[in-house]
Image (cartoon, rainbow, N blue to C red):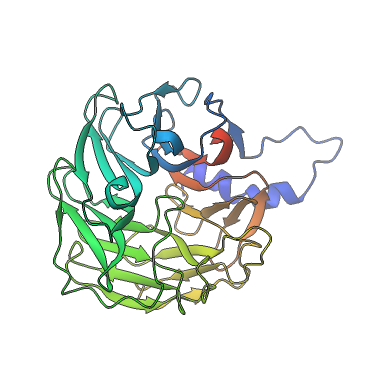
Length: 351
């Protein structure tokens, strides 16, 4: 385990035991807020490239980028996008990124930049009034998918093979039927996630059962598995997924209605999502984002409006380590972990 991950694993123990008077002050890993200068924007889209570089996507058609660890942020929003709601961003580096706007009909759009946001190209605009796109993911710099809520009874999958420069709707024959009321949650850009060259998972809610759908062929055929998270209400389900490889994954969610309890708001899998087990000690409330810690097989963070939770045993138990509000979280191999949310809140994990 790398030093940064080891420090994070120690977070729970360090925060639980106060330093004695004769002991030197110990630095504990913690979120350090970064001023974005955008207090009216809610950032549910986050792409962490490194400890220094990150992209944000949010309300009001806002896209921000930092290349100095969050000290300064550049507004690189696409022109004419002020009415759009950006909910997901996937970045390949400091210059190349793809952002997704969500909504009914033509409100669902995809933009791509190759010059750090100086210019953008609209590469997809939804023309089907029944479609509503929620999330996107990339397997590599060329191959990626976006997902829409069910159209004619099945989730719709959009595919790119040129890095998001062009898109096409995949055939629906390999997609299982959706449940009544089933949909994805555009809460953190993590309702569609991938691991490796071909595996991808889709999180659902709003129906009788929360489910996770899995494809091993880049979205052409899918299997669906029930997940032991709150369901049976339009506000309940799986909101976010994270896979550290094609076998080991985490699911978080619950009920996003403020003040409602969210028991069993997390689950874990060791077989690629064929089966899911509920966390023995889940987060205490709804969580909308989750990410594995860099170079760790057992540590991960989950975030939501009421706090951040840490697991050090692969999702079997969670413990709250911060009470700040965040919607999404993302980590990078060089020990960079970022979180973003309402009122322009963005933070980087410092230790």
